[in-house]
Amino acid sequence: MRGFAESVMQGPRTVAEQVANVLREAIANGTIKAGTPLRQDELAEQFGFSRMPIRDALRQLEAEGIVSIHPTKGAHVARMDSAEISEIYALRELLESEALRLSVPGLAGAKLEEAEQVLDQIDAERNVGRWGALNRAFHLALYHACGNRRLLGLIEAHHNAADRYVRILLSNLDYRNRSQTEHRDLLAACRRRDGDKAVSILMQHLREGSETLVNAIEGDGLSRKS
Amino acid sequence: MRGFAESVMQGPRTVAEQVANVLREAIANGTIKAGTPLRQDELAEQFGFSRMPIRDALRQLEAEGIVSIHPTKGAHVARMDSAEISEIYALRELLESEALRLSVPGLAGAKLEEAEQVLDQIDAERNVGRWGALNRAFHLALYHACGNRRLLGLIEAHHNAADRYVRILLSNLDYRNRSQTEHRDLLAACRRRDGDKAVSILMQHLREGSETLVNAIEGDGLSRKS
DNA sequence: GCATGGATATAAGTATGCCCGTATACGCGC
DNA sequence: GCGCGTATACGGGCATACTTATATCCATGC
Image 1 (tube, each protein chain N blue to C red):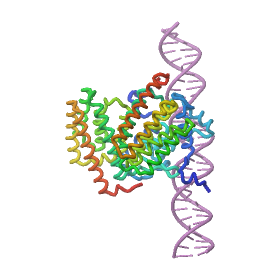
Image 2 (tube, chains in turn orange, green, brown, purple):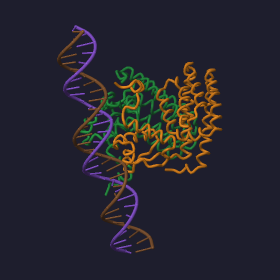
Image 3 (cartoon, each protein chain N blue to C red):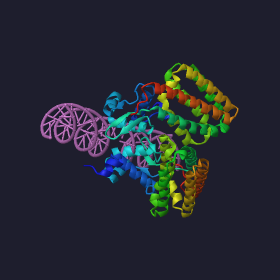
Image 4 (cartoon, chains in turn cyan, purple, yellow, red):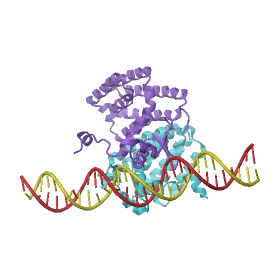
């Protein structure tokens, strides 16, 4: 009999999904750097599977915008220059402010509690790798009641695409403190059902993130195009 | 030596892409109806290829939201109920109004000419199957100067996802005439660089489309969930 | 000495076959 | 007669093997 966790949590049911999850995390936490070619048979040997599920996984990651695939040339981790980061953040502003605006009036108390607990977890969490996921969880909890599942999907996709860059932000203690302050302000505005205020805090929050990130990336050698 | 068309036009370079294109069109024009299971070996035999490129094509279409894949259960053409149509149109309003707002100030005269020519083509076109593509081309031409390629990509993706439903609209002569009137109003506003007016016309245009479509679908038996 | 053409190597695309999971139907037991 | 268990069939996931395309390097000719 299958374990309780697998049967309920709808865990990865195919090798391709498992591979995709491992690769996504490895790319997000920087183990595999931007621009790295992802050879099918190389990965196949490392994972201990054939190339087929690896191909499927790469296609899935391509759909998420994390890797690029050129026919007959193979896949490589998608490089992002600062212009693309700006694009992603511009879209996040657009999508998330709309989601928040729609969500605030119908936001259940339970979700607000959940969001607050996530913020406490962020403060307590010492493992850098978890911050990205917790950050995403906080934001999505607030948007949960927006009533448009497709919108939520888009938002999640953009979080995934930018994840490894967001982690650059969150590894900076100074930014992290500012971010948490804004998060708590945002949560408070949601509690007061003050949608307009919440949206303006969110916009400010995202704009700061975007600027900090663009500066960080243009300072490094990360801004080379693929 | 390879033909000129293939080498320059960047046409489909793999079988999987060709299959994906054919399937996308077949689904869009109703040849393959919503909910139809897409069996790998069945398609493989019909296309005369093996199941592998068909698998790749199905994954690609899944990423576009046109088909759904459940592990071990296979793929089927994604069903959309009226709620999902509403979601897509809500997103189109959000994404396209932003794109238009950004694009209008920088819209080159050439693009405006191009858009007008597309409108003339729509009036002249007698082949129903081409209307969807022309409709998309018109809209994208106006958004072209928005400066955010990722935004344009999202808009195109949503056009693709809703394509077969938009065609229901466009096959209605009455709606098509109204739509063309609005298109020309929209184009005129863009020519005057009146971004606010253009956006409000666009919102009205999309809202009408959404309402017409939801009514059409709820009238039919198409609204069953998958 | 440089450029161009061809050969070779590398890696992705494609084909085929097998295995395993899921669903459905039939039978047996209660 | 109804329900549960088992068996069989259908179909998708994965592996292995082969083909094709592209890039690089070397040789040859200008």
